[in-house]
Image (cartoon, rainbow, N blue to C red; front, side, top):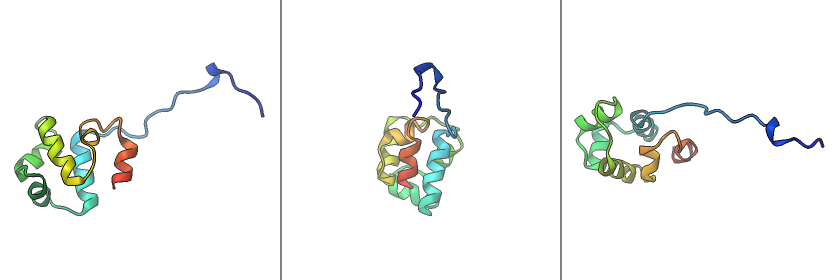
Length: 92
């Protein structure tokens, strides 16, 4: 086996870039929940769920925690989707 030097490696590129709203919608769709169902489970109004999914409002720490608890995932998956792709895949 040929050994490779450090400078011969190519950095990995992300497979997809997701927004927080896309992650919320994706997890909700994978669970088969409506916005109303997620609203009931998270304590956030359906209107605000829609605004979050459409990136019309910022998520904030409190809402991220409520949504994460509803999905039974770590809040970082909701707040920082670009770093948590594999965890999102496992949660689905």
